[in-house]
Image (cartoon, rainbow, N blue to C red; front, top):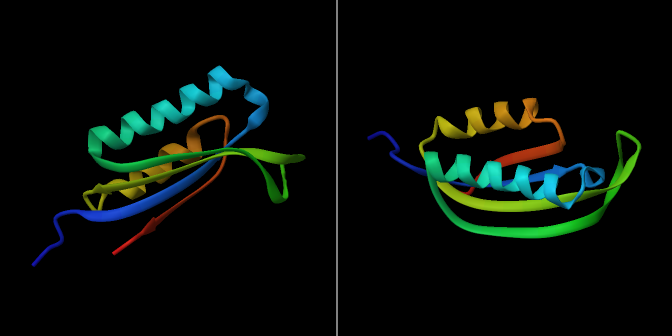
Length: 97
């Protein structure tokens, strides 16, 4: 029997130099995208944190964790959108099943 929905978790890091409004807009963009394609279980804004290593000469990033449920095909599309969005420095999506 095919899996209807899967449980996933994603963390993405936004460039902190964009400013509060731009960061909030990016976070809201991904919340809306996930809500359109699934169900958000929780959103945890970790805020600005120091990273373990530099990315693009930056030592800090704005972290957001989202736990959601969606069709198994959606995480690949979400990853594609992360990669083409300016301001997103890193992202990861994992299955919680």
